[in-house]
Length: 215
Ligand code: ADP
Ligand code: ADP
Ligand code: ZN
Image (tube, rainbow, N blue to C red; front, side):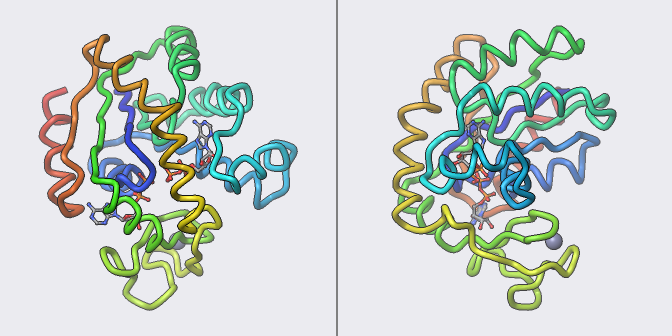
């Protein structure tokens, strides 16, 4: 099973993906997480990606598609995977269509999580992330049990550099220009289902679960 989570930054893709992988036996692929790890470890990829990420711009397609190509061939993807934050451009989607037959996979469903813009800003500016395991929290909507400490691994929580108000606004513009065209791309392929992401975390998951159960 291959599921793509599509939606603007802050829609809840990472949060819902965590719930999906707990229930379904799927590998989790987040290009954002992979890129942040590369930046932190100062690898060659990280050094190339860093400035784009800090400015809220997309990292060039050629760098990102190589990450995904390699990641999809790892053993945990054999049962299927959930893609969060990829594809983000039509060219990335075309690449995915080319690479999937090589590994005998195909897209089962693209879930578009839709959320009002004001709510996106509120979610992103209040987001906190575990520096060890990458799990997401929110100061108001999903606070950790102990302030600034990850419930799952005890790691320190931090605020992402690109979750500042200025960069959030830039990322929302980038989404509209470069990623939103994927909505029509997948609609035409009859793969898209829209989810009302304005509800609370569990209610959004119920909508997703009712779709996944039928696959
Ligand atoms: P994305 O991966 O789409 O950028 P995240 O899953 O990181 O979004 O969610 C962004 C922020 O909003 C996080 O702080 C998360 O805890 C919070 N959040 C996610 N889903 C909801 C929801 N349905 N209601 C309220 N807050 C949410
Ligand atoms: P969000 O949680 O806001 O949806 P991500 O963690 O998915 O953000 O991505 C953070 C940053 O990493 C993006 O702003 C972009 O710079 C880079 N990035 C992640 N995925 C991609 C991708 N598929 N193509 C290009 N850049 C990407
Ligand atoms: Zn953690």
